[in-house]
Length: 146
Image (tube, rainbow, N blue to C red; front, side, top):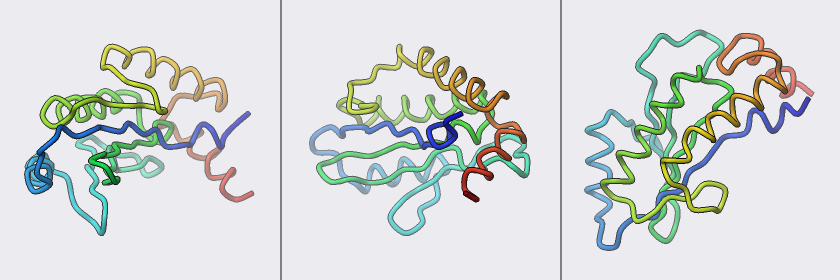
């Protein structure tokens, strides 16, 4: 059982088009409901959040060289929320992106299904339950207490 790997955040890096003004990016994200805190932004879920789940759907970090990182914690979210994450990533990428990377490789939305399938299989294999479940949360908490 590799719980450290299961609870890792997954990050997708959007490479911004040239001449994109950060004020336009921040306005767009604000209009979509993102909240800015310190040097990052986050988007809360819009469904019922169980007490053991994360209420954050997307976290955004601004990186040097016109790169913006979109992150989520798949194991702490119900799988149906993963689609909403990809919708956010896709919408932003279409508006401001020149390309997207995942794990240092180019990423296209056509790959979404295979990534979702891999996450689901890894979480079920390593935890014996589905993402966002209370038993997965308990196992992750136990890993932090080591």
